[in-house]
Image 1 (tube, rainbow, N blue to C red):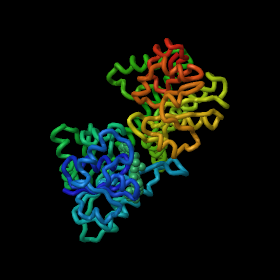
Image 2 (spheres, rainbow, N blue to C red):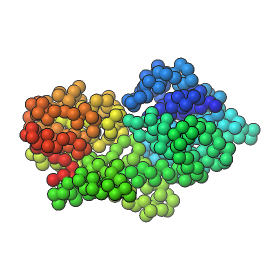
Image 3 (tube, helix red, strand yellow):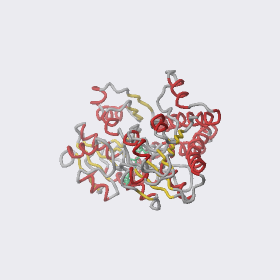
Image 4 (tube, rainbow, N blue to C red):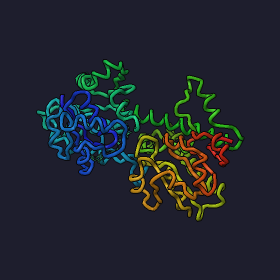
Length: 435
Ligand code: NAD
């Protein structure tokens, strides 16, 4: 079986390499020439642990990358993995990339092939695209469209691609299901991965429902964090205590600066927009509050800093972290960068350090100051902000760090530094939702 992957970003590039690892002949196609050149050279165009060895193993063998859509013509299965960012002018998803990608492959689809959407899309997209494919392919060419949403986590993308925790196969027919079962045969057999076979709209909705739930869980604990701050309670202990209830669970209950990245924020907004179009705005009205709680945490950190260092103009603030999460260089809608940007606009002199995301951060916020190391970043700082939980930040020695700053003030936006060790070293430690 031959596979094509359209769109080779964080999702598609890893999916392409994963499919090659599973033994398929794979071609990855993207309109971004620089990204394709990097992938052709088996160099990852973004940071993702364990990804580069997979590229090195398969590029030049079963895996190739191109900007020429004609090269998908041999493929039996085409995975559509292009971006669905938020529109500039509304909360809805921008579908122009998905539509363009499908239009670009239509002239090259062979009879019996299967187009499989993996991008996160508004419910109803699959049906619309299936009709478009049906209309634009000759009568002699029968092509079906399925939806197979992706649940990988950046930072664990290779593991999640090769060993997913579940497979959702939104299929129009038994034939399409059979093809997808062949693609994933190894994981289904070896890992006993649960397979949920659905219709197209259910498959589309599973993904946005999952992300809405995760976002809600994070905003729930951050709302509790706000109450803890008022009452003098400790949200980390509260999370531990409620998390022992296995109906609740401890995962995704870490209070802090909230969620970000290229998925959760835009997915809950796109879901709200789509529900509005369907006349069901009330059903997901709570997502607007989930979003608002999340964004309030960022403003809260800015106010904490202002209060702690006595105003922002001219203050030196060190920001540790730029990526939206550790083990990634993805800065899309990153809480860390958003806070750094707000502090800068309020007159502070902001220095940012991140182990992997400096290049991407500088592209989005070129006016911030970027340091080459933690030491340089915190030098002379009036406050240190810990905003992305990279392991190397947790391992910093508070005493050594204290020797470099102007004031020993640390705001732990992820609640995972050693509070007692910082206090013992004379720091004023401020967590979120902790008295
Ligand atoms: P991305 O921006 O990293 O990658 C998208 C890629 O599509 C880019 O390389 C872009 O150049 C390419 N592209 C755009 N138009 C194209 C076209 N017409 N033809 C070919 N390529 C084109 O985005 P991503 O993070 O990989 O996300 C892709 C989709 O997957 C989104 O819908 C996202 O919500 C979903 N998703 C992402 C993740 C994740 O962790 N990143 C996880 C699950 C689902």
